[in-house]
Image (tube, rainbow, N blue to C red; front, side, top):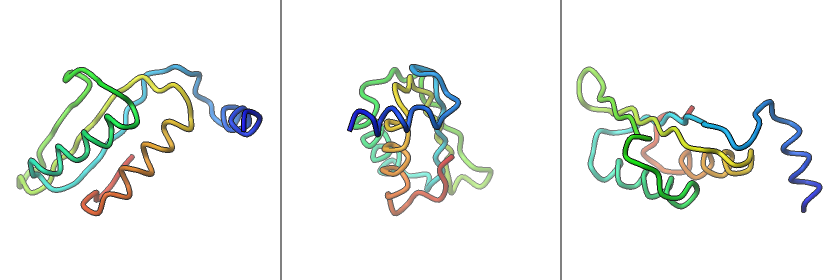
Length: 94
């Protein structure tokens, strides 16, 4: 498992730990916001409120959420991305 993880680390241009932003778009609901934060908590741990940036769409139907966190590995980023994109209401994740 260690050699597999080391190979994954060599495949990225990032040097860990590093600040990493992830952007999520979905419906502008309290539930969606809370669910995405819970997913992030499970993969990233506790982050300050200032790590989140929330921007409503022009019509107010959707929200863009940006979380900037300290990534410790490519695997952490990949696991977080997979968990977020598995949420049925996520429209886009970058």
